Length: 351
Image 1 (cartoon, rainbow, N blue to C red):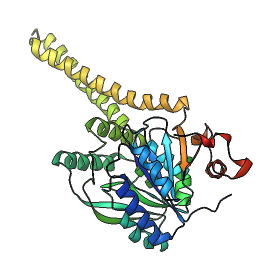
Image 2: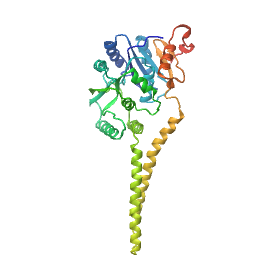
Image 3: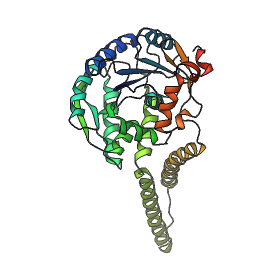
Image 4: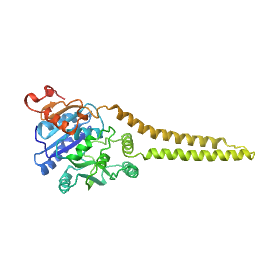
């Protein structure tokens, strides 16, 4: 078994060909400053349609610390991050995006904080450059809504940019849910978690990979993963609607006893529409939770890795790699690039 590095840097990549080389240069320089050559830089190609994988292959051939992970298809940021964390072996693991909005150089400030006993050091955004007012406003609304609904304390204005101890990563990987919200899951784990305030830079190149549709889906995943409050809201809406309906029934009966007919087609239709809308909202809320239960019950693989690359060598991991325990994953990674007869015959496969 090869010796585990002291530091792993995990970066999910989706169509990042324009800035990937610069990210690798800066991340490797930061890692060497704190860990010497005892680090690995894990670049996860999340089903890119540009030349991202070709660049990863070239970087792996030039820098022995680079480990390329190519997923079979686009799984999304959270699962791509999970795949990278699963492939990591370092005692400390930095999770960071490859778009250079989160400066890799902050690793030099995070490591001393962890040396003083922190289990997690997470980046706290004090300013966000290069983002529209709409993105800033919706992000602020999302974090404040989540903070008020979540059953655990999730720091506001934070992303997945964080340095974690190995034990935290192993606990995170042992959590089986498919609809993942990593920053919330790390908060749920607990331990000593310390914020590092910083100003977030604008993207080095390219465009955001989170359009409005993905932002909404991400928000729904976050809220339904860490709060049952929407279900309670649905219950209260139902009780309020029933109370109003009962009051209207009593009012109608009293007017009938007084010999007066209730007129007003528009008011009746408005009431029916309002109650129908409330019912549909409640059904929709229940459906969000039920749909996630159905997806979890299928027990499909969390992610599928096509190939991993170190240097010029390609290897395959077991099909059930995403479902393995932490120790078995590290053993599978060591075996994938083991010398001699221990190496899989499939290692000669090209990506």
